[in-house]
Length: 372
Image (cartoon, rainbow, N blue to C red):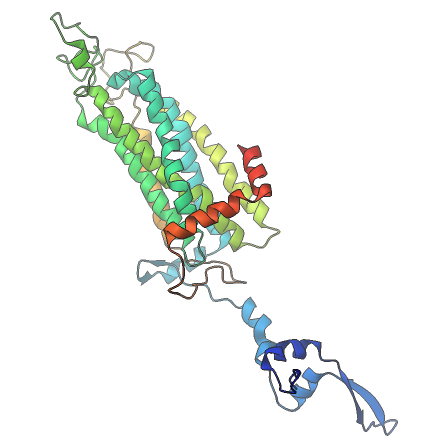
């Protein structure tokens, strides 16, 4: 029965509403005890009795049986990895990524920055620029990554994995100055002919040229580039990691998962300080007869092996996260591809509108200001 409009014509648009709101009807039926009795039967029961099935009857069942895609690498399906296709295992890999980020950025970099100053003859202002380049990189890419990676059709695990690969590449860049320079000597330079102190070679030297772009101080640009890559790589992890965890578990478990994930951002720096301190007790060239001791003011410890470790582990962690499907929630599909339309705005036009919606939200702005 369809609801009639003012002209007496049935309107199918009201079919669903009518199905839910139509009252039960009373039917006369023959009873085995009283001969005749009244039985209350709903419209749905009558449909089922007459063999009529409504497509909406199985909606709830279909929602609970969401099929999660297999783990894959590019176009190759890796079904043997499906045992790790759960929110708990994803939390484990995501926690490892958070630990590596804290270990590298807030741990190793802060520990070895003074050794880098001594090794490459950097000034304090130059080393300060190196340290702040991470925040500059994150600031540049944070908003575009959050907007593009947060779309319904975007694969958040692959955005995070791409960030981990970028962060691993940044760690590799940090080790390049060690392999491209000569051995460190007592004089502090790369060799006996390249003393650390201006004019200490006993001849007239242009000090401005010695500390200029052609000297070891030029390697500061390599460190800045590495820090920018670190910032680019950490942005998807910090923003999209929390979002994907929230989508993958039920609302009651979401705070616990996010708390565990955020905790590893604090554990990572602690590990970085301990690891970096132990490595600095070893000579930068991994030799025993350098003629210097860790107590000497000219001592330069092994500042670079820690970044090789973070490079390898970031690449491995990135590939593991890359294999995850777009959604691992078995109760609902959180990655639905919208229909393409010619009227849909481009990224350049849609981003300012999205930013304005956030800025005009007083609750969001007050929370952001309080957290800053």
